[in-house]
Image (cartoon, rainbow, N blue to C red):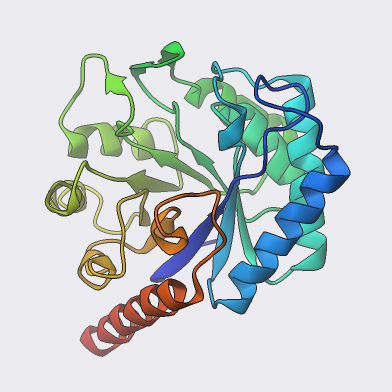
Length: 266
């Protein structure tokens, strides 16, 4: 089972998929080709893995469309076939059930359920509600062994009836059976405070930083988190850009320094 150890993920966010509002004329074959080129950049620049997310299909409600599920399966399968040793996570906006189905079908290493595993949240697409029951049911039906990593009170939504972060995280793991967590605050200080709070109740649960990491702060953050996903910083502030090799080198060097420190402390 996947368990992060100062693991660094680059986000792979394909062009808008056929059927989505912003899709223009690109075929799925052309999109796959783009994704594989970007994945090669990830490999060349020393990242541990990727998280595949159809972020450019926004706006999206909670239940993924049939075409999004099909196209994400195709893209994820192509990545896994060409780069079998690269750790692959799947995030299908915003449907954790569909994410798990795709991940299980293509042999991915984990899923990220960003909106919404437990509770309820107000987002730009309306109110999203917990999918933990449905995710548990599909895991049981399919006997899936794919680890489910979940966001706790994701920063881009407003949690309804929000509980203290550590209590919400404990419930996600011990009542809804998440395998690991994604957590992030609005800034570095808040992300560290959240991690410290969660560790008081879940000292051994894998925890990945969901966003906000840069080459300047990743060394410090990985003293509190087991892994990190990075998107815009390595692309000079815009996901449409290619990975900047200099920034990627800085980021991964700082992550490796944090990993070595953890080894010495243990």
